[in-house]
Length: 145
Length: 145
DNA sequence: GTGGCTGCAAATCATTTGCATATAC
DNA sequence: GTATATGCAAATGATTTGCAGCCAC
Image: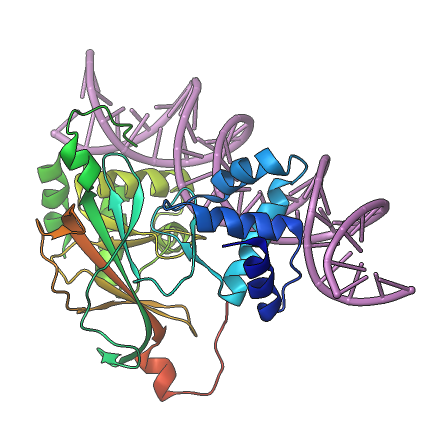
């Protein structure tokens, strides 16, 4: 996504498209992993050395609030962020390398369904296991939790 | 579950069945909500006024480590705990009252399946929406986040 | 211009840890 | 008796917040 596209998407949501927010969105758009706020901070810092961690946190929160970014709380220590793009709402965490992947996790549950009497607005599927890469190069040189 | 049953389950896992841990397990067994560590602390404190919050945290962690309790990180602020009992692995969060319910969320994914090349060890389904109680007594007297 | 941001530092909150004492067996 | 757990207080780490100056429009 180019700067113009990012700027437009920010403006549509009512957020001021500051350099920092543009940088955050572009970074989220460029990675396929799900970075933590600190990952975002470190990455964006290389081009914007003056950005503060608070701005990253505040910016991410603003983006989550308007729905441009989703926040994953699959693990306790630090939230992970994901640019919303109509992708499937499934995530896979590798218990070896601890990476988080998007997956196409099928579910029979639909928005509006009643499950045990509760009305569903959204469904998230979290899968745990060993990722394709770790399965392939299964030599154990992984960082464990 | 009575004290004896709890004691036995603890002993089976190699954990010392202290009064505090028994109290934690009995509390988790007695509630249908998913309490936070602080909820557990406050509840157990009524019968064990000397228990410390650190003991609750350490005890919960020990229980999670041996697999007697599962830890839910569906929300960012505080983990929630759930006595393992072979129940379905689905959870519903009410966006009104913020309660967390167990639900029987069907999924076509099985342990051992490959999803996008990743090998699945476990599946969690998280649903968001409005719970049955809030749907019924829809008067808005809820605490929002 | 002005309101919404940024950036810094201080505050907050959940959780962990060090250590001396107490408990389970 | 000995290993393990408790309880207190202090440490840690992610995230939030107050506030003065800055930027987008």
